[in-house]
Length: 316
Image (cartoon, rainbow, N blue to C red; front, side, top):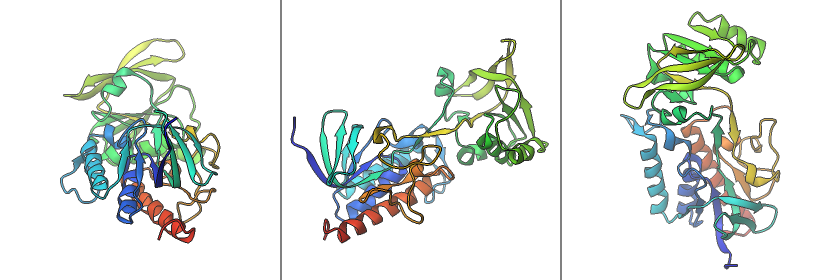
């Protein structure tokens, strides 16, 4: 077995939270190591135009934004490791991480910034058109669907909230649900169903997203869940609102989570239940899930980690 690598701070995840934490940690001379994970750059790498991240007057492509942040972190000395964490022992000191390439990492502190993955339908056409009319974030992309007719898949509170939000831009929003009743809370249902711009297609599931990257989404192929009949539904966009899954499997229950699986941090900070372990970004945020809030919490995590290490005598 190879000799373990030691780092003052290991940052697990390379999205907006992880890279911002790296920038701050590197400038504090903590020599951070960023472990990229399965999707280097995080969810923004599957986003096309980003118009709501401050500093880019005319917008910027998601992958380009992540590349800029990566280069900025590297400029200050961040070590980038293209691997995934398979196992971890966060209660050890230093913390122990085992990567999927067999590398052993010993870290004085750890920032968990692994994000959350949107639940998708699992269709090849959905993947092909992600960012080209298919989205999993109404707040991020609703602006691009002004005066268009769009569809939202889901039946919970998040689907009601996303559909209601999208009526600010779209001319019509159709909720598509595979059952004959929603599981959302009554107040959220009433808010959506009383909106004149929102219609509902019951007992239907999407089997194919129609369109191309050149023309965008043109429609959906729907299957009736009662009689299995199929039909084409014309729409100009598809939003997925069937939930997110925090990327915490590698932790194997070492840290407390809420009922949805999001890591719990101490109010007003990024401290987790284990000293020297911090959480930032969407892995601990089920409410906002924005690049800018992730970046902000990444900054907080780096500052919290630096202060903790100083008090523990691990950084001078």
